[in-house]
Length: 235
Image (tube, rainbow, N blue to C red):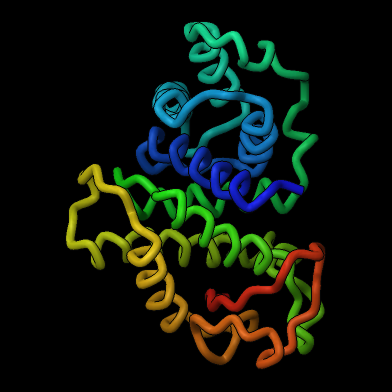
């Protein structure tokens, strides 16, 4: 299990790659590949953004595929002089190494970035985002029979639209355009998240937004043993 800092860096790395794609979606398989590859590479945020930019050039249909990311990452890795970087090419079928929840969480971060435009995400904001939403993904409420991850096939698009709305809301909080190169602070991300949660009631949500009192809502651990979180997202 990664440490808190490692989790925050993973979110920041995913967000930087997504930022380079300028709003593209990412397939489940590509997200799994990227999550697994990020565990091995030492590429910095600027290089990850460049990978997103190059992948965008070859992608079709507005969705990144494994081959788009792998080709872009290969170009950037081979062009860079990085003695400590992982060997290229990575193992075949790398996308099979990432757990399902990591692949889906990568799609969540891409949705957030799609709404945030050209903004960057501070490390504190990344840490909070992971702590709040990664465990929500695999947590099951006592009055339900499934976690958000387990119903993702039917409800995932609705969930992703709310994460995109959080990214868009940050622009409202900060009063900047989608092309502004700013860094989103923890407070700005929280303010947008609370607003979206409050407007998005559903059976998978707690009765009050922004509350993380586990005893108040009676959640059970689902597919993960990590701490349970309180978040409102729509069906």
